[in-house]
Amino acid sequence: MRKEEAVFLEPENYVLIISTLAENGWFRDDAPPLEMSLDDDFKDGMAPVFSGPKLFDHFARQMAQDALEITSSSARRLHNSFLTGMLPKDFASSSPLSSSIAFVNMNNIANNSTKEGKQKPLLLPPLTSLQPNNDRAKDNQLILSRVTIDNKTALCPRSNTALHLIVLDSNQRQQLHQDLVRLAGIQYMEWGSSSKASPKTDEKKSSGITSPNTRHENKRDKKQQPKLSADEKNNRDSKRAEYELSTFADWLNVRKGEPFTAIVDGANVAYSGQNFEQGRFNYHQIKFLTDALISMGENPLVIVPYKYTMKTFHTNNGAQKRRQILNDVEQDILFDFRDDGRLYRVPARCLDDYYWMLASVSDQLKPTGGKGVDMLHVSPNIEGNETDKSSNNINTERFPGTRPMLITNDQMRDHKLELLDTRLFRRWTSCHIVNYNFTAFVGNECVDNEIGLSTPDFFSREIQGNPSGDGTAWHFPVSDWGDNERFCVRIPHLSSESCK
Image (cartoon, rainbow, N blue to C red; front, top):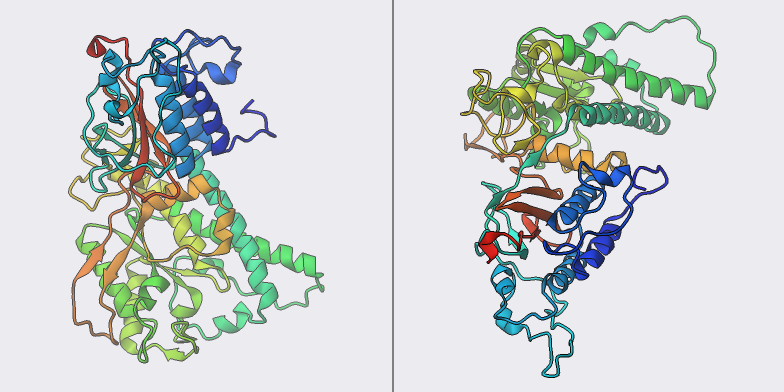
């Protein structure tokens, strides 16, 4: 059913299915085979009829493909459903199973039978928020706990399981590439319809600073062109924006030299902390950050909007726009970036966000020999990387994270980004974005030469399962819990020798 185009299962649908099965004991290791017909979509390499922990693992894997997180109410429902279904009908606190329940004090749960032998409802925890439980559980214990994942080691203290970082695969990178090109066309049309400014007037004021894309900026045909309708103009503008961004992507793939391992959001860095009276678009800040990256062994590319490479432009760092004129030192910085091959000037009226986003997922085929930039440096918690970690191409002493890393403090609030696939966008931000921190310059002076870089995420904010004991520990992000908190579920094999 999941493969039908018209069918999409929400997280709540999966919670309903899983909690119903859990409550009826189908995930117990000693449960009888589930007698139901499963189509090819659900066989997943296993027998068409199965039950126990493997059944739960199967539904959790399917849920991980369709959902990113659950709510706290869903976590409570799963908690209580598993608690009900995992305890035998003749449960008593002295039962051998009691030693496998790691999430609740068994003395606080009443015997499930009366003196007359009749069954009575199991007393469950109240429907209040689950409290964190980070105590280490035994390998044969059932875990249904709210846990806090260590932000530096990605380790779950309850299950002693390390979560991993899930990176974009080649197909997802290509999809993100195509989506960014499409959004660039949409944005260009919107700016064109709301602005009377023409890139042609801007080009006349150029300071002479060029970038590798200069050769694509041909002089316009001065012959009289036929008058176009509004739709024709929009289509033309959209195609131009898509062409410019695709040209940039092609340049990254065919250029000579070492691959870029760090992409710098030039405008974001230049404006950082410059919201004061003497504030300006500060090229000294870009140089400061770029020099720091080079000293760390990185090869940075600075991406700057077109207008900021002109000698004169209007700044956007305050309530009022002010005219800024680049001095000789600032122009020298630009020329140095250009001569070193570290500058890319975004064409006029094109949004630079799409350029640095695309650069961060570029494979840079020729500079990397077709291997991809992220293969040059591998984090031990990255899933899906088959590179030999003993390779001489891997520098384990470098700044952690995938490559290229994107240096920016941009909050990604552009409404167009909402059109991107949520999973791809979250996976991209987790893997590539590195935030920075330094004291703002006043002119070319800075009172503190220290610079701080935040490490990318060590694990993904997605549903994931990892080996734990003789089973699998599943960690579910919860939308209204902390960023590093998860609902952890691990079903032990109760029939194993460790439970006897």
